[in-house]
Structure formats: C-alpha cells, structure tokens
Amino acid sequence: MALLRELELPPVSVPSGAPFLEAARALLAAETSAIAVLGDDDHVVGVFNDDDLLRGLFPRYLEELHHTAFLVEDGELLLANIEATAGEPVDRFMREPVTVEIDSSVAHVVERFLHTPWGAVAVVEDARFVGMVDQLAFVRHLLNRLDIPTP
Amino acid sequence: MDVVAAIVFAGALILIAVEWVHRTKVALVGASLMVVVGIIDQEQAVESVDWATLGLLTGMMIVVGLTERTGVFTYLALRVAQLSGGRPARLVFLLAIVTGVLSAFLDNLTAILLVVPITLLLADLLRVSPIPLVVVEIIASNIGGTATMIGDPPNIMIGTHVTELTFLDFIVNLAPVATVTLLLATALVYLLYRPQLRIPAERAREVERLDPARDMRDRPYLKRSIAVLLGTIAAFFLHSALHVEPAVVALTGAAVMLLVAADDVEDALERVDWSTIFFFLGLFVMVGGLEAQGIVREVSDFLGDVTGGSRTAEAMVILWGAAAGSALVDNIPFTAAMIPVVDELAAGQEFDDTNWWALALGACFGGNATIIAAAANVAASGIMARSGRPLSFLQFLAVGAPVTLLSLVLASVYLLLFQL
Image (tube, rainbow over all chains, first blue to last red; front, top):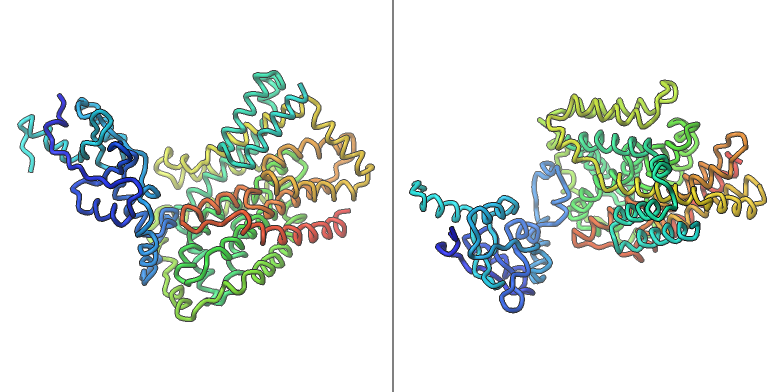
C-alpha cells in the first residue's frame, strides 16, 4: 500500500547555505516538525528540525547541562545567541537526512518513523525531494483509510 | 617482529595525537594487529590487560554518574561562584579549587564535564570571556587529579598496577605538591588573563540571584547517592587496612549504588563511558606486545645507561620525559607504555616508590602542556567548540606551556627535597 502518494506532502525546504533565520522561519511556517535542506538537483542533503531550531536560538552549552532550575531569571542571557546565529548557514545546524521513497510500504515508513527521533521524514522520488511527511498526518490518513474515525 | 611492534605502537600514538581516527578505534585496531600478526599470543594478550584499572574506572563512572543526577555537583560549582561575589581573582581561585577537589575525588575528566558547561553559562551571566575560566579549570583538573590514586587516569593505572602503593600513599606523597602547584599555577593563569576578567558590578549581582539548591529539591535518591559516593571515597582511604584492592572498592560502591539509588539498571550502566574502557583495553594489549618483544626492556636498559644508575637522574628523566611524552601524545598511552619500563628499571631491587611518583607527576602535570595532552583537555575543548567558543591549540599552549614548566620545576624541587 503506497500510502505516501495519497498524502499531501508539504514541500517545505530551504537551499543548502541558507541563513539560519530563513530556515527557522520556514520551519515555523511549516506544519511539520522538520524541513528538508536541499542541494543541487533537489537532492536532500540534510534535515532541519525543531531541536536544531532550539540549538540555534539558544546557547549550545544548555545541551551539556542537566540541571538548570537554578536560573531564576534568564535576563538577557539568551538574546545574544539569537543575534549571533541568525546569519549562519543552516548547514551548521542541520543533521543527516532520513528519507523514504514515495512508493515505500506502510511498514517501511513506520519503521523509519520509529527510528527517527523527530516526527517527520523527507519523501523522495528518483532521489529528488517531493515533500515532508509528518508522523501524525501519516497515521491519521492511515486510520481514515481503515475507516477508523480520528479527530 | 620487534620492529613491527614498535611501528604499530608508534603509528597508534601518532594517530591518537592527531585525532584523525577515534582513539578507541586506533587502540583496538592496534591491539588486533599485535595479536593477528603474532607479536603477542592470545593468552599473553588477555594477561596483559590490567583488569583492575578497568574495574576501577567502570565502578567510579557508575558511582559518580548516578550521583551527578542529583545536581549536587552543579550546586557546589554555583555556590562557589556566588561566594566569589563577582570578584575576578576570587572567582578564578574558587573555581580552580572546586575543580581541583572534584578532580581528586571523582576524576578529572568527570570534573571537567561537570564544571565547564556551568562555567560557560556563568561567563555569559557575568559578560566575560569563558576562555580564562575554562583554561583555569582544565589546568586545575589536571593538577587536582594528581593528588589521588583515582584523580587522573595515569594515577589509576599506576595505583592498580603497583600493589605496594595505597590510596593513602598517593595522598601523602602527591597531595601536598599538587596543592602548592595548584595555587601557584592558578595565580599564574590569573595574571596572564587579568585584563580579560573585568566583571561589571551589575553582572556580579546576576550570580547572586541564582538559586543553587533549586535543582536538588525533590531529587530522588539524593541522600543515598551522596552517602554511597562518600562511603566509597572513605573505603578508598581504608582499602589497604581492609585488604581489598581499589578496583573492588569502586565496583562494590557501584553495586551498592545500583542497589539503593537506581531504578533502571540499563540507564545506570549508560553512565559508563564504554569507549574509554575499550580504549584502555586496546592500549594494554599493545603495551603487552611491546613487552613480549623485549622493547620495554630495551628502553629501560637505555634509560639505565643514560642515567648511570643514579636515582636522582632516573627520577628526573622519568619526570621530565613523562611530561614531554604526555604533552606530545596523550598521557594515558604514554603512561601505559612507561609503567613496564619503570617496573623493569626496579627489577631485582628493593621496592622504591620514587620513580612512580616521578611518573605520576610527569604524566599528570604534562597533561597541562597542550590541549591534546589529557582526556580532560580534549573534552573541555570539545564542549567549547560545540558551544561556538572554540579554544585553539595555540591559545591553550600559550598558558599551558608556562604552567607546565612551573609545575615541573615545583615537582623537581619536591622530588629532590622529599623523595631523593
């Protein structure tokens, strides 16, 4: 069952080398938790997701800390980081892409979702980017196909 | 075959130093080569692994890793920052002291992983460059780690290999010189960085507003974890009287910690840095290959000829040689290679601990010379790079080299006055 062809796959992406702020805006406008970063010929070279957005907006050392409740007020601590990263290329923040072919089976798509910590993977056809598939949108469509009502 | 063994080991050292390939891969491939090529046979390879070192490392990683969850180390670092009142000299010395003490009783790599991220945040709050503070912490971690058997990997290897040396022996013989060196080295670092450490008064007040205890409130297992950690450290002091090896103390501490302060054993065991454990394993087999081919004996004969059998010359060559070797390579593989050499030098003689202290001081203090000289330095520079505040090789060398020189002069005076 090639379910992906039935789905509307938002073609949310930015070109490789785009500034971080452009990628951040594209992600915030998209209805998925990740967008594709495209190289030449619409090849997916990376994925920029909501964790990458946080890493770019806020100081990276927060990731190394496990206890931060002691910070009663943030003050201006975080603002400087946003200014510093706005113009940096998205490639510095993106991660290795997770892709599925548009004719993939449901089981394969589910397996990819289960092994992808963020809930969206890039769909490709003949190695070219088609769009992003969101985990919840995929499940909702699958349940509807099985006549199981969803909200 | 001895030439092949030397080439494999030297090649591994170079690859570890330049970091082209992960050090664990290098050590394991080097060890496999030693066995496959026939430099060392399988039985000898298994015997050459110092299982006590691996046990001590694994045990302490579990004990410290589970205690870290409670937030107690973050609390300590923040309280120290608040005690400084935003005065730069006080802040630098207090951070150095807390890092040194944590390094001595946890281990210097863990101490760095705990304090550097907090320091980056504090530096942002205080609007100062984090580099002076992180550099002083790296230096303090290597010097503080020198003070005990469990503070720095070279000492762990020496302590578990030389069964005559107890936990208390390390403290009695190394802690005084480490303390003096820590204070003087911190003063030197402060003087070098003084212009960069001006803290505006209003920023100092930001640190006052922090609530260090907030992270520890309602943490499960807080009291139990701290009790097991303190109990384990106390048991180290008593291990000789109790007739148990330090590795047994650490592993027993880990077992008790798992029993009373860990719900999820799988999660608890993830606190073990398995890549480091396998790195040591490969390293021990490679050094076993050098021993099997008689290279260790040749090096020790050479050292004996150079020093003419003089205890003073031997200790000085080991001290300065270990520091130079650690600075260029990494103090862990260098110490692993030097332990059998020092053993061989003492063959057939009455036990004398001087050369072991010289090796410990040289390898640990040498760890401050370059950013690649010790695992703690590499970890700190990794955190800095990931946080967008890279600490370059030359930036660190400009401070690390004079500090190492000062430390080695102090260590030489100490050995000459109190050990020789």
